[in-house]
Length: 397
Image (tube, rainbow, N blue to C red; front, side):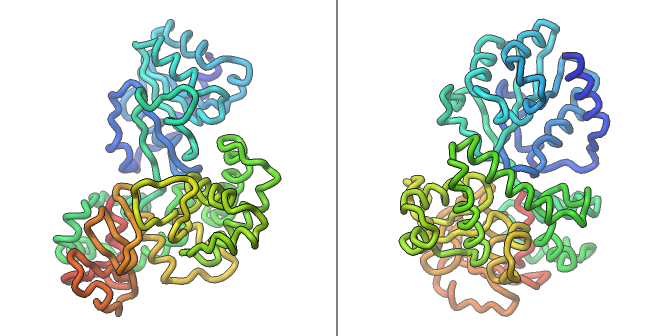
């Protein structure tokens, strides 16, 4: 245990708290069992260490460990937690729980047998809380973590403290809010940069290697997490990669399931399963006409890559600007809102608001006569009436 404590203290020393993600303020840190899921590279580890550093830096009753540490290849998590509690420990932060076999059963046992211990854990976006053998859904409060919003990207890179906007406030006051924000900020200078490399926080570490690192994240997700967490046969990985490439070349992709399954050489049900798994892994986003009664074997109406950075990295051709705009909108809205396909336009949000996405000259014809219809336009700093700048959708978290 001493070696793990030494490694934890070293990590804590090198953790900066200069920039804090909005997720930090969304979590109820008083709950006894907290789970944080998210794709590789979105900042889950940093979030845990920052929370400790800001609140319990000198508290010896607090400990962080990563379950991919070699120590846990020959030591049970339950026994480790038991020793920690007997030494007076009260808060245990567990990173990468999906790397540890039987993590859910042991977490359940720790929760039930050690009521004095609070546990905060992180894991892959593929982590199954509800369907795991030990059902943690009644015990754990689980949060989803996305990559940086455009607002967070600006705060991170410009050392600003721009506030989060609610969707209702944005729709009602977007002109005044945009005027206030753009008085001291050249948003249209920064927005294209965000679309290319602003989603994953590690861009600033080695900017020149960012595309390669994004590719590594994609490959690790496909080659390690899908077989480990979804039981995908590794012999099918080339077909899944082929499927992801097809989506990346034409996102938003309107799938013809029969033709696509024939092209890739897999059954219809296998194809629908892989489309679902790609979405669960946060590599793609499935847009449906209805948010109710969703099943794994339901055909998506449109498929997007999960974020715009993936579009620039995975596609061998120049990404279509219209597709980039729609992908950005869907990515920023889906974190806190229900996003479905609109019969009349591009998106229906929360079953109330209709949005048509386009460039600065986009007309109103497609939302004419639609209550709560809005044009979301790229390449404008300030909107008017029902025309809202696209960049402002990046201020919702």
